[in-house]
Length: 342
Image (cartoon, rainbow, N blue to C red; front, side):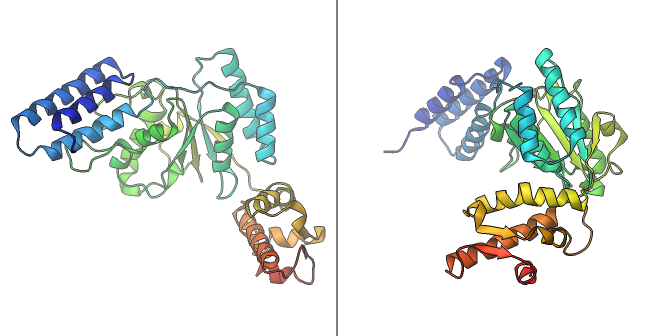
């Protein structure tokens, strides 16, 4: 038996009343439900309007207007997590621990926005993940590379067909809390034609005096972003506006030396790659003298992306050898290195 239009509007009303919304938004939502109820009683085809309204109500009732996670403020545990996930990067680690210290003493403290700048592969994105892990907060990422349309960030008015919120509101829904860590990734790589407008939105996001009432065109109701911990990444600061830079605390992510890469490869990337492939740590042994060739197969690279690809390739070839019963364990030495690097 099909659900009647009256039943459908009743379900929407219960949905609105079943969550804690800001008072004015709840009033607005109930007025929308009342309008749908009147339209259904008048008859005629109102399905398009009903679908649009139902989609809007689904969005506003699924957002974390009041839901927040409790911060984990154990500095010893935080340092343990940072050291587990990253080798070196002492300046960045110390800055994170300093922020946690202040937050522990003053829970209402609003952190400056950390901007991690450096070459590709220097650990900017993974460090942002670690910040969320140390705090025990949810994490969401918004890529800015190639971004050329403000609608992507601000959403589109619900009066348009198939309209939806922008990336900021979507990130909050994904996180499920109003105080997540949100990574604004590669903000220096936005499209030149839209750069001025996007930088203006970034100022609104990052400025404590403005982000308590962020305006998304689809919601048509301000959302308080003041509890969000934004983290920004960029390859360099050249293409970032002065107004945005004024609201950032720049932390430079240095290039890795070959010696640092060897340590990262042996102690971080290789164990992680083996575990991801379902292989035990003793399945693949690499002659220690070969690591300089592994970390620099194609010349200098400031980051570790090439190193990650090289090690993942070694592990995949090892997995193939084992699953096809060609070997039970693999030892990479001078004689077979090129075979495993090719």
